[in-house]
Length: 93
Image 1: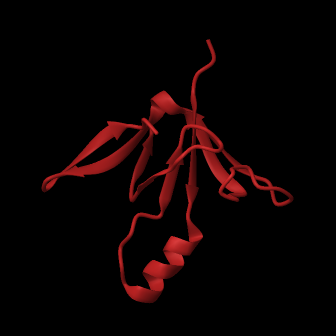
Image 2 (image 1 turned 30 degrees about the vertical axis):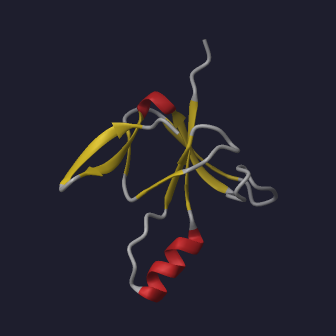
């Protein structure tokens, strides 16, 4: 059985906006398909092998990302907030 993949990229527009305005919006996008909806987070943990992929000639993801970190989705965890507590959850996007 083929494992589901997770794709992690950085939203450079969010990074630029945060730098310009002082806001702290999450800038890390985590997807479980190349064209899927992203879960935007501030922190990601990869508890297994991963690969950093850069393709300058064409986007890897539908969003236009040319540099991604690819890993088995079961090895990727995102930090979320529940009330005042920060917890780690498996990626489900």
